[in-house]
Image 1 (cartoon, one colour):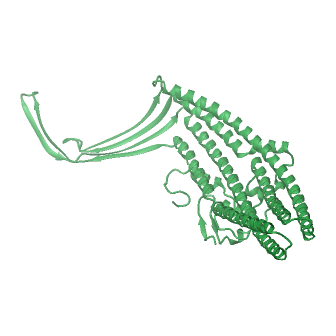
Image 2 (image 1 turned 90 degrees about the vertical axis):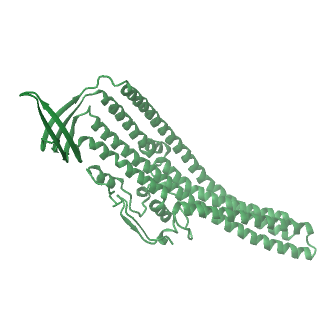
Image 3 (image 1 turned 120 degrees about the horizontal axis):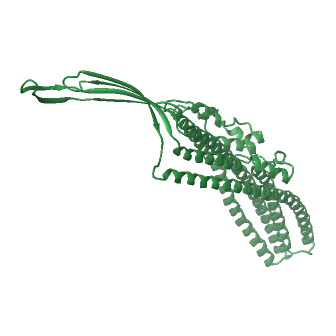
Length: 462
C-alpha cells in the first residue's frame, strides 16, 4: 500500500491519498508514475531552479543599496609648533571614539541593453527547461507503459509455462502407464521425462524474468504491483498517417521546441556579449555621517549625488573573444536544432513501422496459435491409434506453448508500439491521454518568483 503523502511544491499543491485504487490499470499506473517518479520530480525541481534566472536578470533594473559603518577607539598625542608670533607650541592629547556610518545607492541608467537582453535570455532558458520537462514526462510515461506491459507479459508467460509443466506431467504419467502395458518403449518415457525437465527449467527462467519485471515496475511506478488489468492501444490519439505524424512531430515535439528556445538564448547571448562594447551610465547617491574624526572635529556629514559615465576603449581583447565565442555557440545551437528535427523525424518513421509490424504480428500469431491447437489435437488422436510417437506429441505441445508465448509478446508489443508512436510524435502527456491527475503547472512557480525583490524562502516555505 502506497503511503499517504503531500506534495507542497509550487505549481502542484496536492494531497495524495492511498493509491491502491490506481494500481490495477494501465492508466492508474501512469498516474502514479506521473505523481511520484523521482526522476520526473527532479526535473520539475530543475525547472524551478531555472525560473530564478529571470529575477536575477531583472535585478539589473533595480537599485543597489549598501550600508557601511565603522567604530573604534583612538589615542592621539599631537605637538604643533607655530612661528606666526614667535615660536609657540600647542600640545593636544586625548582619547576619542571615531565612528562613521554611510549609505550608498547606485542605479544603472544605461548599460548597452545588457539587462534587457539578459532578461529575455533567461526567459528563453525557462521555456527550454519547460520543454525539457515535457520530454522527461514523455520518457517517464513511456517507461511506465513499458514496465506495466512487460510485467503483464511476463506474468502471462510464467502462467503458460506452469500450465505447460502440468500438461507435461500428465503426458509423462500416461506414457508410463502405456509403458507398463507394453504399448511404448523406455525411450518414449525418457523423452517425456526430458521434456518435463526442460519445462521446469523454463518455469524457473520465467520466474526470474517476472521478478525482474516486478522490480522494474516498483522502480518506475513507485508501488508493488497488484493484479494487473489488460492494457489497450492508444492509436486514436496519434495522427492518422505518417506524413501528418512527421509534420506534428517536427513542429511541436519537445525536443525540437527545446532546441528552438536554445537558439533564442544563444542569439541573446551574442547581444549580451556585445553590450561590453557600449558605454554605461549610472547614478550614485551617497550619505556619510562621521563622529570624532580628530580631537577638534566632533561631527561631519557629507551627502552627494553623482552621475557616472564609463566608456570602454580597450579592455585587453577579452570582450571581442567573448563575442566571437557566443557567435560560434549560436551556430552550434542552430545545428542542434537541425539535428533534433532529423532525430524526431527518424523516430516517428521507425515507430510507425514498428506499430504496423506489431499489428500484423498479432494476426500472424493468432493464426499460429489456432493452427498449433488443431495440430496438437490431431497428433494426440493419431498417437492414440499408433500413427504418431510420443515425441510427436511432445513437439506439438511445445509448438503450441511457443505460439501462445509469441501471441502474448505480440499483444504486449502492440500496446507499447502505440504509446511509442505517441511519444515520438510528442503527444504522450496526461492531457492527451485523459489521465485523472492534476497537471503540474510550471508557470505557477515562475509567477511567484519572477517579480520578487527580496526573501530567501521558496514559495513552498523552505
